[in-house]
Length: 255
Image (cartoon, rainbow, N blue to C red):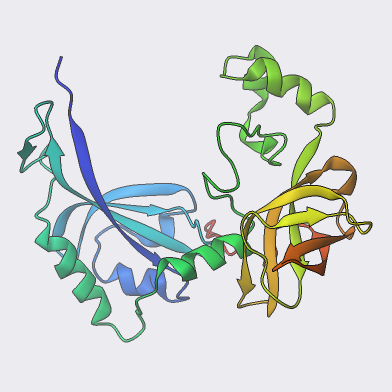
């Protein structure tokens, strides 16, 4: 048995309204046919072995360009090619510089990406969902198809299926507040001051000019518009439960 692993490098290309036009100059495939949650293997500006995926983790229209740089074999060594599509690591720099040569393309850090995905109400694994969270608690039941629910052929089905038909003790919700920003692990309290949950992600929203967050609260406090409090720097700050996404998404569906 041969075991191999791969080293991938991603270049995320998001938000810019002219993203598809800028990238189209460097690919042979028609990006107007590349819709949300689809991908294509194509050279990008002459660099082979690139996987272009239109996933939109920020809630905006955008793509990720994945380059397979090398393969790790079972002994821990590296090979230069993976199925004929591996590329030199120097190509990552070359592709980045080629994109930045266009005045419409700007560098942005993970903080920008994180605020966008939070405005879109998208979960970050390890923060908003983990092995202790069920899809029902996290408001992600839409990820379980009808057939899977009927045959119960997925891990955790014995717990998750009954939860779909009943209420869980907690539920993931959005929160909006003013004043100091709400951060991860911030306690969520009822208007009377009882702890009812905890924030899992939070930041100021550049689009809304307010603070946005998500977290888990007791189900009785999960209805949109419910007033709550959050404890920020040992002070109580008013907040309100909100529907998500906070900002409408702009995924490209081809229409």
